[in-house]
Amino acid sequence: MLNTIDVDVADRMDQLRGLYACYHKQWLCRLQMFNYFKRCHTACNVVTLVILALNVIVGSVWKEIFAVLSLTAAATFVKGWSDLKKYSQKMDMSRFAYSTHEKTLIELKTFARGADFDITSFLIKMKTLDDIVTDFAPPMSERFRKMYLEKF
Image (cartoon, rainbow, N blue to C red; front, side, top):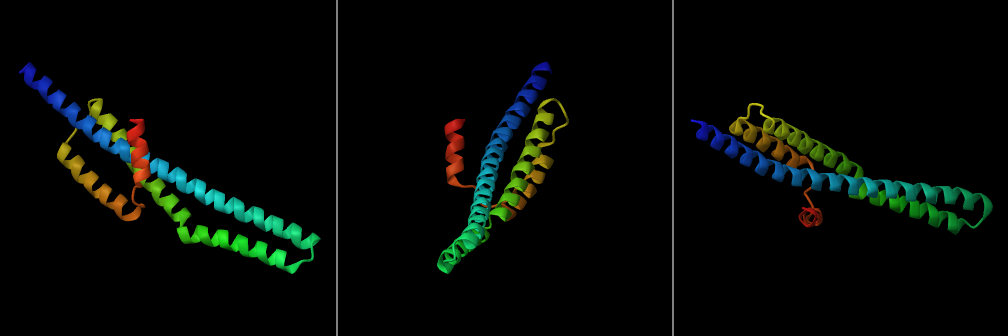
């Protein structure tokens, strides 16, 4: 009887390790995607603001209309590029995806510490959450998967 319990605990821990590894990869890749989109969004906004500030300075000092027009066009282009790429929306959806996977990792750690673990109900719940993340979040980039494989 004691050997059966040890085998059940070992099987349970193997299942939890496999699930943890899978969701850790998704969590870290989604977190890296969030940080990437956040940097892009911030960079576009900063460049736009710097160009507009330069536009105000150049417009008040230099009376050349083409310089002012070109700076305005450049700021509009950068802001339009940011809006076209939808960095803010991708950032929000990536935040949703990585926080969902982070909660899954916390739940798996709780199960590993001895909480009741029903693999069937957990997998059904995770299938639903994975479908929601797949529908709303941008697809995971191969670049981030490769970075994860190099690191782990």
